[in-house]
Length: 84
Image (cartoon, rainbow, N blue to C red):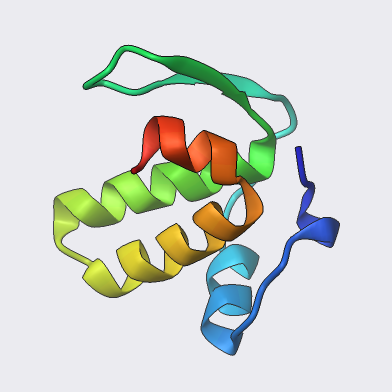
């Protein structure tokens, strides 16, 4: 799993979004509510996943799109399980 110092961030908006996240210290298991599949995420991926899901709820589609771009590029296997 990629850590923040290894992330591929292509735009200033992506760097700003990741820089503003509160990142925990441990890996977490996250479940896809539709398929029931579970996967372990590193703290950076957990924080970004939480931001994406929260932005979906509030209708903040700019952050949804930016977050999805970062997530799919850096955690493609996890993206296919949780967010595709």
